[in-house]
Length: 430
Image 1 (spheres, rainbow, N blue to C red):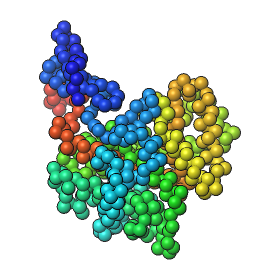
Image 2 (image 1 turned 30 degrees about the vertical axis):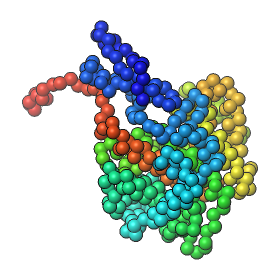
Image 3 (image 1 turned 90 degrees about the horizontal axis):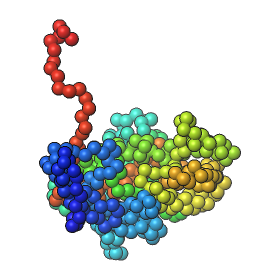
Image 4 (image 1 turned 90 degrees about the vertical axis):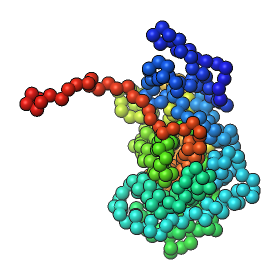
């Protein structure tokens, strides 16, 4: 919202004023939309570190306080008291559901979990050893070829249908990508199970035996989904918004988000963290690797510590640590080599002046890889799980963007540093 404050910029001796916009939380922003017209200049902000690309009411992060809010609710309270689908309803609608709304929403999602039967054939077009994220990018984008009956995005009901379809079908597609990779038959969804238990059934069940999900493990994975549901204007969310700004269908937009999430600097961080723990191998070698992490001439990086946004503890990391302990306790893996190694690494890093001074605290990726491995999820599927959960946030952000009366197709400016204008010479003189 606008305020009475203005920011003054001096350009070539001329003062130009811009309004200051005030949000509910966080830093105020200078509205520079008229900058080009008033000055003939644009701003340069590589990586968008100081640029607000949109107005949003969905998620807020205070990196200095280590705070993450979904629609105003702290992530800690939501993870403790709500199911993932309740959080999905909150992100989509702005308020937590009452009992009747919760039941209706769960039934709606349950009725959309199956995918078109012809989708099964898509998977046979991929190599068996294809990375599951490559399969995800292709199959999610292809959904538009099957579900094109609700493409009027000015219609709220069409937007609701698209949201429900994607949130419901992502677990099915993720499980199918896994089953195809390991050579097992696809498992149909079960309507007698809740969202997360049903996903575990499709992942780990076989036609030979009835799979009975462990409630402790189901709850742990449900919390993981909640912790990854949304995270403000990160790279993949910005990708979804940018793709959607052209009017692209939501299946294509989510596919674009999945492709961006696949990058190791984004969704692949928990896999990299697990690989780091495997490289360290044993508690006795933690000191050696801590020393390497502090050596600027050494290429080794301590994965799972620090975050671009959080300058304090990542609130999700504390929750993930508890989930990790619960899962390993339930499975009798308290003495798991990687878990003990992670705890020792965390302890030393938090006491070491180097890491403390730089505020390199554990982030959500530090424990999530260990938890997923304990659940039986292979590392190649970690980012698929991330995409499954983040689809809720992506779709919510997509809808907010296309219903914003101020939204326009994204068109960032650039600072051109290439060759100046020149004339093509005759070929004989080149």
